[in-house]
Amino acid sequence: MMLTLHPSITLLNKSQFTSKFLTNPKRTLIRSSATSPSKRYNITLLPGDGIGPEVVSVAKNVLTLAGSQQGIEFEFREMPMGGAALDLVGVPLPDETLSVAKQSDAILLGAIGGYKWDNNEKQLKPETGLLQLRAGLGVFANLRPATVLPQLVDSSTLKKEVAEGVDLMVVRELTGGIYFGQPRGFGKNEKGEEIGFNTEVYATYEIDRIARVAFETARKRRGKLCSVDKANVLEASMLWRKRVTMMASHYPDIELTHMYVDNAAMQLIRDPKQFDTIVTNNIFGDILSDEASMLTGSIGMLPSASLGESGPGLFEPIHGSAPDIAGQDKANPLATVLSVAMLLRYGLQEENAARTIENAVLETLNQGFRTGDIFSTGKKLVGCKEIGEAVMKSVDSQKKASAVVC
Image (cartoon, rainbow, N blue to C red; front, side, top):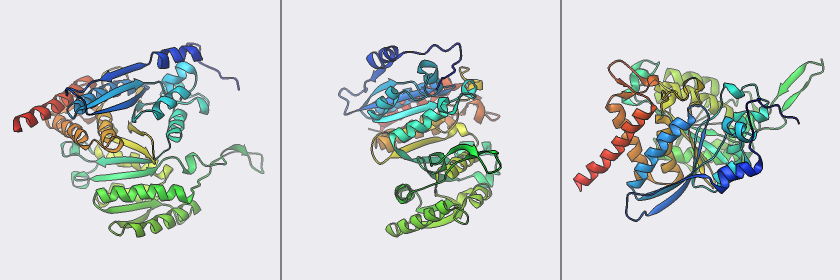
């Protein structure tokens, strides 16, 4: 197939790519402030497109500082992905990027996509690289928390009495269902009309493993799990409900309920506090997690974690690349900062460092710092860099407070 590229794009050949990213990679070794670091981790950074590099830069600094307080040393390797990779080598996920990611302890992704690549063929879209990355890493469980923070309850579009106290987790199956099912494609019907078709398909092992993650997640939260499907219409959902119900026998301490997806979409707006943990398939989870994100007032506040049965996890904010504000110091980096907290908790099992970052974000908000997407009257409007610096100061202040107590 002949690929048509933008005339301004000069692709790197194989040897140039190897020289730039592998022979002399953008590698940063961050040493702990402790005299002898007790732990070392390799982190792959995928800044991506738009505001991705800005928010990843802030999150990297916060991760480094919080880790150093716990005697943790990080080595970072930055690799191209998405539109950035398309411009460099003509594909959205270079083999070398996936290889480096697989060899790391965790991956932090910024954002991908932009108007520049919207008209590309499907295999040359940045989003295709993300699907390939998830499949290549084998991350099948996507965890998306949606918590309405007290400091931001007035930013929600819902009434205060509805939004206040919302704290839920969406567990989305990530590598199966209609996004990956076969057959798929284009064709013609018996009338000669063009058609497009996709296949919603799940095997029992795919349902069982995501259900297990969801039950375990609910066990660590408030012990309630709602499985969302469309079992009144779809055979794939009928099997989904059957397997999740069977799995419940292994978790007698968890209260399991079932809900059709259309009702779940309504209930998330009507009474979101009824939910603790939600588990659902790929496409329903894609939609419901974005809906849940707006309960909080801004998509710029929400992190996510994608986990597999083995290997490194993928951690990223749920917002997009926001090309309209890229490079203007207007991006909200807090979702990415909270994503590195999830990286520490779920990817590296470093709970203390994760809590340090989460507390620093809350303290920064308590001090009145706000980016434009969460700004309200009486607060201090700041940019991406300044709110990142405020989080860093809050992380540092926790260390000093701890030293005083000791």
